[in-house]
Amino acid sequence: MKQVLLSNELLEEVSLRLPLPNRGLAFGDGFFETLIFKAGRLRLAADHHARMQLAAAALYLTLPAALASAEALETTLATLAAANQLPAARLRLQLWRAGGGRYTPPTDAAEWLATAEAFVPDYSAIAKADFALENHSLLSPLSFCKGPQAWLYVRAAHERQQRGLDEIILCDAAGHVAEAGAAAIFWLKDEVLFTPALESGCLAGVRRAQVLRAAQAAGVEYRVGLFGKQELLAAEAVFTANVAAVRPVLTIATNTFQSAIPQFIALQSAD
Image (cartoon, rainbow, N blue to C red; front, side, top):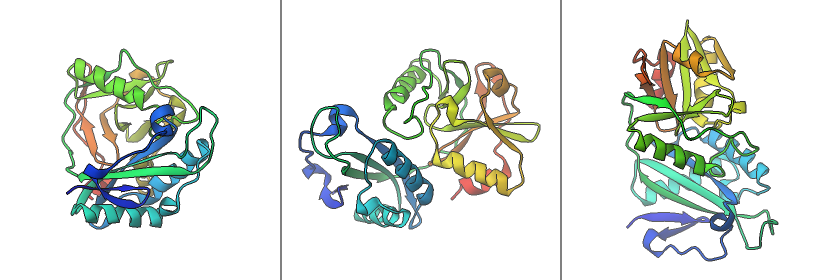
């Protein structure tokens, strides 16, 4: 029977009940993280926890004790993976403000729910991508974290599906490249690595941070900034990166690219 964690209480999924009022449901007053547990470790635990701390601070929330440090986060979610007998698990951790009320926050305490499913990585190349026509990224005090602007990614995914694309690329209102529909985007040109700055409204992805650290450690020049579509289209190679996988992009609109991921990244992508 599938198990979940509700505010650190292990329950069978079929018995889960979320009482009302629920501020996450009513106001979207919270955030979530998607995490990978594999080979007995929580992948990029410190990065996830750092983003959770920033998201909690931005929403005036206090992280519960079971999630209060990277070590506690890993221990707590390892319990869930083990309860579901999943050696490799894709975990979703949803936090929301406790209590009721209207817009004015009644407390800084958070309730949370963690769920698990089998993790099956997909490292395949993205054959067909294009820029979004109906949606664009939005910079806000919360655009760096997951949850508060999830509607944007739902709309982008719908557009991707309707247009028969394998991936969709979001730009900001000024036309600067921001991110892929569910991943950070990177490209290579003349041995320089490029990726959009957070000022584009993109998510502060944990794998994005890891790729930049890996580039720095390997002595690879990289640039983080606001770049137009033509700068991306002039690239030699393009790839997306999120906590699940790093994937090369083969085409954007009518532009084709090398099916290549830099060696310093590829070595980390098979973990």
